[in-house]
Length: 137
Image: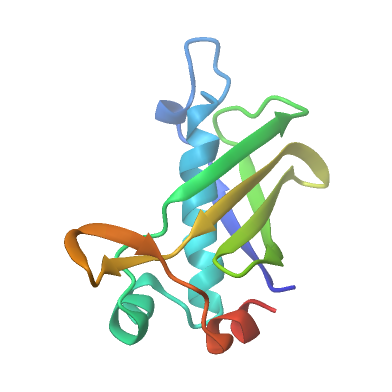
């Protein structure tokens, strides 16, 4: 499946008082890495909005396993790849490395949502068109 690398430099403000990256920042970076991956595949949120009416990409499930601490000044490589593409969902794996050391492994399960035709106040998951499925493969 498709993959991309997104680089992040750990800033002082990303760390807790002990000087270690505050764990919620990894979820923020996972989100950014996902958007970079989709943009690389010509599936930017702008294009998804224009061509498919997508209004967002909410998370259904997330998780992370931390192997090693990251600190101010570290340069992290987020290797993100599409693990599976369901009828309405995509599962993205994130492997975060500092040099060749794996520091975090994470995942996201997402859907693309569009306005519900029957009720404009609601949204529904988009059944993934073949063009999107092909791009993700």
